[in-house]
Length: 314
Image 1 (cartoon, rainbow, N blue to C red):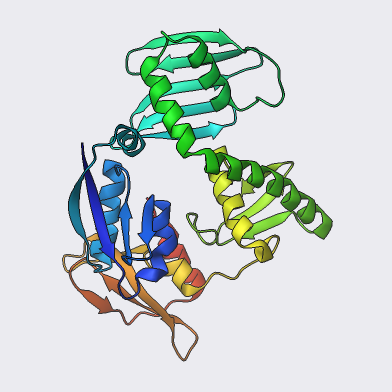
Image 2 (tube, one colour):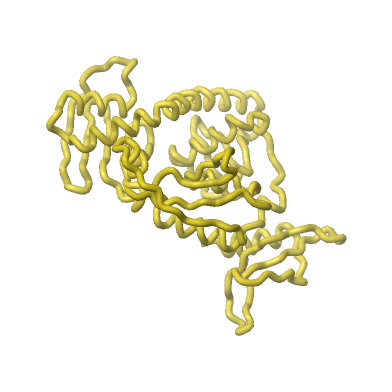
């Protein structure tokens, strides 16, 4: 099979966007000094990435890599999506299409082949507390029922071997989560957890409510996959547990868009490529339309500009 790879050589200012690039499943090769994908990129992710690189005038290229190893083909082609500890999807990477659905309740495990509309329910084989992960239970069931979901067994067993370190890390994060919750309770404040987390809007504050993470931007609890991002961030930035970090101009505005009027007095979005305080302590910005950049004369307070940015969000 052929893997389409995007190659982004290290270049000036690219390091500022490291977290963003890594969040798109790109990997950084410290020897080659470049970012690239080791598996298929979702079509929408590729479009978003190319748009980002063009807007920031970063150089990139594409190349095709031939993959012959059957195990690597599976790793490149499929991925597991953990919704919570009782629900897993297996998706095709390139299209992000859901292929299999795995779900566990108190007594049964349900496996659905979404593509072929085949489903089957299995009784959980035992209540051994040492074997509680859904992934392990599914693989045991499929190993015991060789004629059921043969393709799934091949794909899932390889994916789980690949993700064994990730699973161990998730276990660490679970323990770390409760360490954080205990620490937040000890601080006896308003249960503030953190803010300025990469991958979320920087002005978003997160709080602990019960044993869940609550976002003041959405006024909802975070789903499991997004909550994991919070714990991963804090695991590597422990000094920020319960600490409010003042967002920088870069975090708040660079790479964001605001509405402006074009030469035909039409309302259009333009990208903020620079923001800095002037002598009056107001903010002046430089905008890009994807072709040219222009520093505008209008000055903003931080609150005014943030309001404009929020207004232009999709």
